[in-house]
Image (tube, rainbow, N blue to C red):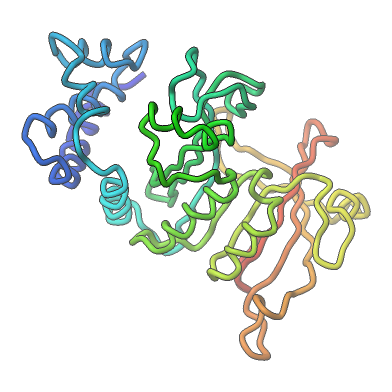
Length: 315
């Protein structure tokens, strides 16, 4: 439950944020509607549609909010840039982590951009939904979303009339979720955000192009991969850890969760170096690791990761 104290703190932070991005909206009424819209999204409103958000804000009709979203001229990418600068100032630390993940938004209709029946990890099944690829930034000071891309299936990008009706920019071409993630990473690394690490689930970790981009950019990563993942100079990753002796596993907590410390058994295997990315001249400066995280209560449940890290990094 959100306490009154927390709500007041949010108000102060939102006022600060609105001052940062307000200049992107040319007219006073647009800035006011933007404030009402954001506050409504954070409010305990049952459905986040224009009617209910307008009612929450005390508007007689949803026309103003609908105009803000569909008719007014403002550039969301400009606001993203302002947001990244704001987050860097508030939460930035040298060992910041960029987190890549996608999420699904279940829909009933067929007109929302990118909607179709497709697998949603959020729902855990195939649903009529939109999929967005997102980036969040995390440090010991807090965490915040910092970028996004809407995934457009080929059924959309190959139907220009449908895209036009949904106001999809005409230059938008098909891109896989992995390609969208790579665009987000490059933008984030070029932003004021201090980023030392990138992490993502197996949908992205299994893509060699995604890992190579991070290595070329000189940023560390810990990426989930499927158990069938092959590693540098080694067999499948599950076979690699199947050979690990009992003493190779160490109990380590990932931090506190809702039910206390999230402890697992971890094992790590150092992988062969790749000279192009792991050496500076004759001197190694980065290491490659395969990691395994095993459930303590259900030891058959094992998650696997590939890591690329500075020499001084520890598990």
